[in-house]
Image (cartoon, rainbow, N blue to C red):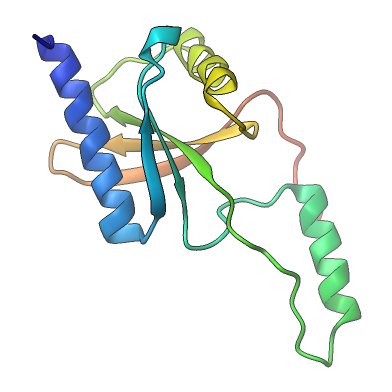
Amino acid sequence: MPSRQGMAVSNVVAAVERNLQDQHDWTQTKIHDTATAGSRALIRGLPPRLLYMHPDDQIAALQQEHQGLGRGEQARRDPELEWVLPIHLSEKWSLAKFAAVFDSIKEAGPRGKRIVLGILHNDSTVVYYLMHEGMVKPRQN
């Protein structure tokens, strides 16, 4: 029989997955149980558009668009599969727990150096933040 805490985490994961699909038009969502790696279940899915572009890629895309100026061309920015960590607002997280999540993704399949943090509130509101592993180079202006 699942524990009460395990059921609560499952409910959070299911609520965030439904929100991604119904409110944000994500497709190909799949729940990955990484709990055996000391972490917890993650969602892998495809957003309708690219969520994040590395600053170096932004510069290259802007240069490409500038070269195509006048022809109405834009650099391709196809969406990428993203990892989502569903948590409840009341949970207490440490850097060690977040590090365990990033480590569990290595075992679960391909990954970037970021995850999307899906934070569920008691009123069923979900807010999303990008969380990067390590240092991120600031964008050039």
